Image 1 (cartoon, rainbow, N blue to C red):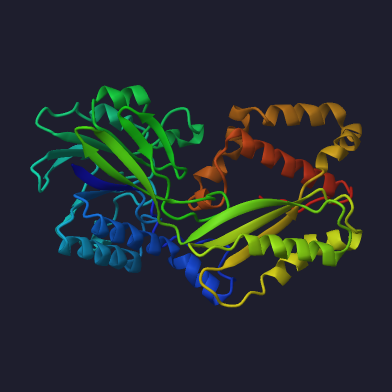
Image 2 (tube, rainbow, N blue to C red):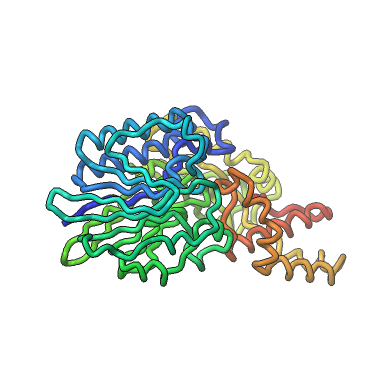
Amino acid sequence: MVKFIHAADLHLDSPFIGLKSLPEFIWNAIYLSTFSALTKIVDSAITNQVDFICLVGDIYDTDERSVKAQAYLRNEMERLNSMNIPVYLLHGNHDYIENTGLHLDMPQNVFLFNETVETKWLTTKEGEQIAITGFSYDKRWVLERKIVDYPEKNPRATYQLGLLHGFSEGIDSEHGKYAPFSLVELKSKKYDYWALGHIHKRQQLATNPPIVYPGNTQGRSSKESGEKGFELVKMSESGIVSEFCPSATIQWKTIELSVKDKKNLDEVYKAVKESVAEQKNDSYSLFLSIRLTDSESLLEGVIKKIKQGELVEALQQIPKADPFVWVHKIELESVVENHVPAIQKLFPDEWIKVKNELEKEFLFNETTNPLFDFPGMEEIIETREERYRKKIMTNAKELVRNQLGFERSDKFEN
């Protein structure tokens, strides 16, 4: 049997934009979280005595990788080297190979893929011949279909793995700049396992053979919510079994809380505080966003305090603890749709035309392309799937309504 770990998108040294004003112990925890995830991967590799590890791109958050991040990675690779565990590593669109004179050398157990597709070989302790094929980015965007350069499975290989940091057509159109491929192309290579990277949401695109995005190892904002981790894969004659292993020390979560029939500040405060307490667990810390629904009965003064951030500020007064629950944001459910007819009375034809046009995917993408092309924005803004388009349109309508002097209904997020 062959055992290996498949991880991707570690994004070591992520800057966590907009969070530096947090209390020191909260900031330290979130800043170190990407490093802690790497340590968990290495711990698991040693505990499970794996044959090798595959790290499939975006190991660092930028191509200008810090010395600290490189030294941390090298130290963890040394731990694996001492246990004779090899690591097969490639770089992606965030940490593409450039300025190699500023890179620290890795231990001899780390095998780095260059910018051309190549196959590296490994003989396990049991004598299995493992072929591992992949490439690293040498620029931010790889428009070519690099998949065409991957050879078919070598007959000498007991198992062959494909490592590919890229975009599976049909997920999100803005990812077409990142080594696009189709499932048909992957399956045509007759590999035993496809270890993918780039998409931060865990998903298995196929089972025969397994074609897997493990997701990133640590969520970095509210758009990367839920459990994050890596795959522990076991391959034998009886089949391939993959087990998801959590690695995130901090999770991002959004909950909805009904405040129906609640009127005054004390009622809302108690309800929110009780809900926050219910979220605490012993396994990981939590960055919590709360969306208050059914707020029609709230006093205007209570609504004002929520919008001004007084409620969230009060709930952020927490003692130093590990793990912790940090209330990141509280917002009221928007009721903007109730006011659309009033806006339409001002410019009915123009409003409807612009709204309908921008809700079309290709026009929305064309309008927002400059944002997604700007370095660092991927950490802040979400992918442009239908849910996010609707969210942006709701926020835009809210902004227009506020600018026209209507009563504000909700705090919105860009």
